[in-house]
Image (cartoon, rainbow, N blue to C red):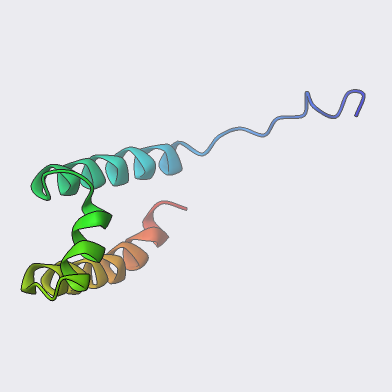
Length: 74
């Protein structure tokens, strides 16, 4: 490993911006869910509540939008 650790590549600034934007959206989603947003999904579906399925629908649609926006960050 001698000398190989110092060969760092530069970090893509667009990926950093994408990570910050994604983190903000996840934090906002957690705030709307009054806690863990993934817990709102699993807890809602397991209890048969409509809000879990609505969460799933919008998470799925948001994932599609996110995948389409990835090409702008590479």
